[in-house]
Length: 144
Image (cartoon, rainbow, N blue to C red; front, side, top):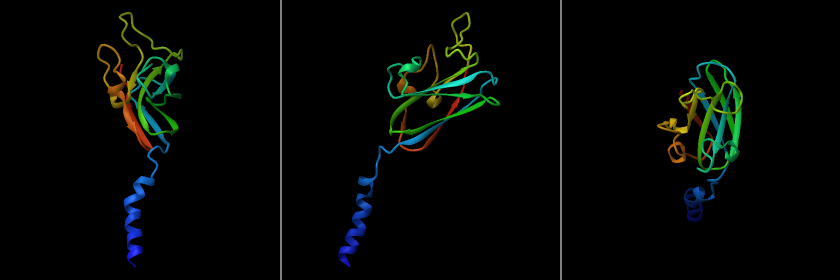
């Protein structure tokens, strides 16, 4: 009976050791606040600061979705645990570039994970980054 109790207790002690912290999980990104349904949202998932948020070629993954009723959703499947940041552009004219006003300010909505603020330029990777460990939903409120 003692050996059974010892085995039972040791299972609870060692289960976390055998759990796989690097098990991939999905990241679902829900975006709200678009002023119209023109074009698409373009979403970049970044694993590092290099390229964040403007260089889509350096994104770990990218996705594109149609806007409906001022909202859009994309899902990134089987993403390994780690630190990530998300950048989103509401690309109304579908040219894969941010439209800008004469002043140089954005003329299309944008957003970042953590709803990181763009003050005199985009936020850095650290401000937008989050830890991904398992399935999760990231909400981003788009801004102009």
